[in-house]
Image 1 (cartoon, rainbow, N blue to C red):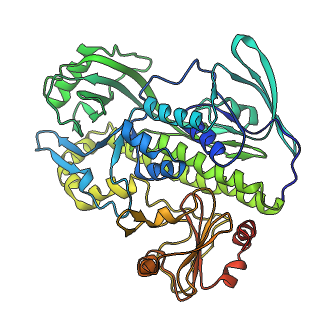
Image 2 (tube, one colour):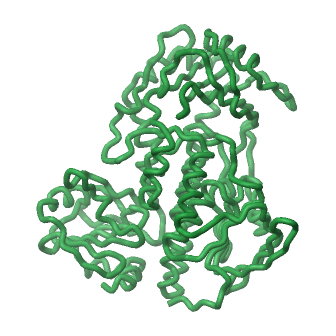
Image 3 (cartoon, rainbow, N blue to C red):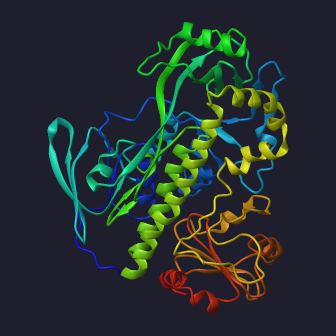
Length: 516
């Protein structure tokens, strides 16, 4: 058991955006005391990030907030791609091969609604955001983190915690206090955004993308009837120029690039920004961690940013909770794995979105001509369209080179591999494999006879023998094999028997906490 000094609180979360709220909610759910602060007056009223992907919905299901979020959003059913004078290619997002997820869609939901759902969930769990409170100083020693906070009316307070997480955005004060570098690279492109009502009778759940000589422009459906997010690349912008984002400007933009009258009115939110990308050098310094935009900034192509931040927090919090029950060496192994897993994920995401952005915004005339010529063919291929499902939905993410995952699957085993998402086949009318998992800890599946599972509280339960063929197929279990699954629904590994598993020390440490 890790020795602890008396603290004021287990965890301090700096920043109450989607990432910070996820961290605070998970802390409460997993039995940690938490203080979450934000210097803003209140929750954001801006729509910002607009899509919640399938893997994030599965995270929210574990958290107990997926139904609340789904009710606040609407599915994004199709994307219509227009290339010059060619007929539009309709990509049916709901008709893709999503596989085994309960959430086979992109969920269109403004960020302020996502944050509302998370904050209400936090309150229901007994927590609350301390608004108008900023971080003044941050220090740590071997045993604790000490912070100085400035609250409303300038009141200064000192707190000591076991850990702290900086979820305070791209200009993170936490990151600066830690001296962690983030090398930013400008993509040298400007975009404008506007949430706009239109007089056009556009399909409510369908988006449009026009790629023409004037530049890329998109209309993305929002849950409110008649409201769309307009996103436009401004390739001819002069450095330092600011656009007047009013109805006339937006109508002219759509008329020029898409060829129809938008009838823009009742602008809900507008923004202009220059694209940058970057990755924090480290995600962990002792007892302090970085997550979300404090750890990675990138192009919004694919809507990956907020989703990645929420998954950062989810990945970290169960490890913090588990570490309290582990011996120091094992605890350090699990806490280090946060950076190993999530920084590698963000690095791939930053590189991928950067490449896609450079292609779509290229100012080279030949590249534009080639995309307009080949675009209709490429957009209609099954290979490209399928990427918009599981790949963009983040369901195929695999952690590699993580010290707490089995290095190689046992001989003869197929998928899922260590580090991959556990499959989620239907077992009965209303039951899927994910429903069998312990929502707060690891789950061990055993197949030495009738299938059984061991949960984090040490309870051994027999499973319906009729499920065995489905379970064996989904888990690729040989003979009397065992499979260990993490709280984030990620496969730790699959072994030929329990004795084989016990030779893998990170899994053995977890089994000790489960009473196995």
